[in-house]
Image (cartoon, rainbow, N blue to C red):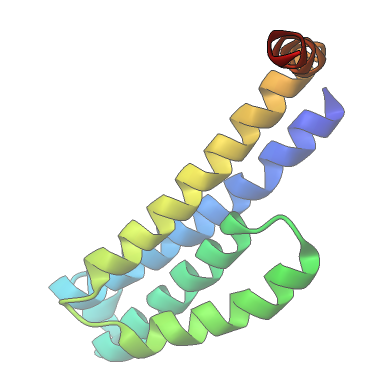
Length: 130
């Protein structure tokens, strides 16, 4: 159970980061709080897109090395391409990464719950072909 809980913990943090990024992006596009107070919608939107890009990279990968390489790249890339037309695509990119994380966690959970299924399936398929 501790291993499984450790796998679920990072996505919660990254989801909060992504939510903050989406909030800032939407606020920049609609000129609502906090952007209407600062008067810098471009900066707030780019900051939100950078947060969303970092959250996407951190959610999609499991390796620290890959995270270290891709998070800054995606953060800068998302910030550079942020606009009214691309904001939905950036959010969909994050949702795809979150779906991938969910599928990996589901597969890991099933492997923990049913440890002998793999050997049984291998035995059945080898027996059927032999």
